[in-house]
Amino acid sequence: MSKAAAVQLAPNVWRIPTTPADLVNSFAFAEADGSVTLVDCGIKGLGARRIAAGLAAMGRHPRDVQRIVLTHAHADHAGGALQVMRSSRAPGVTVHEGDADFVRNGRMPPRDQTVAPRWLTLLDRAGGGFPAVVVAGTVADGDLLPVAGGLRVVHTPGHTPGHVSLLHEPSAVLVTGDAVWNMRGRMTWPVLALCSDAHLTQQTAEVLGELTYETAAFTHGPEIRANAREVVRGFLRSAKRLP
Image 1 (cartoon, rainbow, N blue to C red):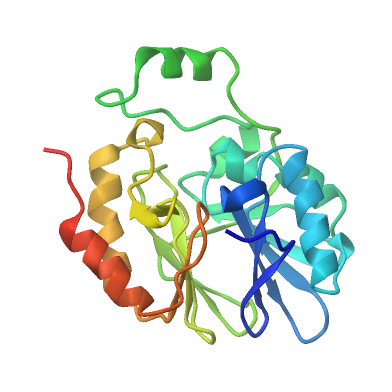
Image 2 (cartoon, rainbow, N blue to C red):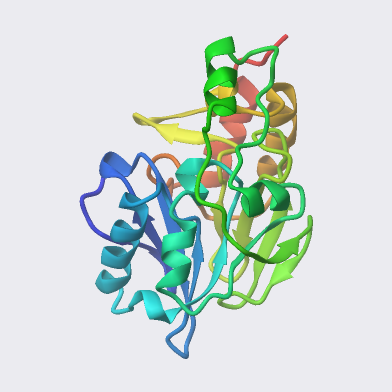
């Protein structure tokens, strides 16, 4: 657990905890010209403040952010996007096409009714969401974004329809998104009641064992640096699955 405002994962790659105890993380990719691409924005209010502090620790400012990429359309990742965008030079956010309409409308994707309790669905219908934000661009599986030498989009749907993981190829850092978590010193599935398709979440996470990377960076929990790929593969082999 880190108390640092920003944790360097590799040259030009940083993790920014947007809540205490590394519960939710954003990521920053720095360019040689001083500009920054930000991945995820935390919750409304707190996320923007923590991101500003993290950028300051990197020697950057919110005005240096020229691009914002969202792993998916949940309030703990997209909730701070509007506020961050307004203080940046980003014209909007980039998100997978499967989640784009949810982001535009500030709505949470539907829950998997086979695992989500009824109260959670009712809460969503009663106004659960986040501030809507402009979608400046969409991505698809396999796209290579011009971010700090190349950020590969890996579509891992299930948690949401457009959920993505991101592989920074120059540094071999994998941002898993919510495909898997690393909470309280151990890897877990995300809370399946929060997923749009719980079975699909577990199926598509298998691709994380096929990629090549040295550091696994999680949007929930601290990174794994030592034997990261084998640790992820071990989890995928042994983790309990839905019937």
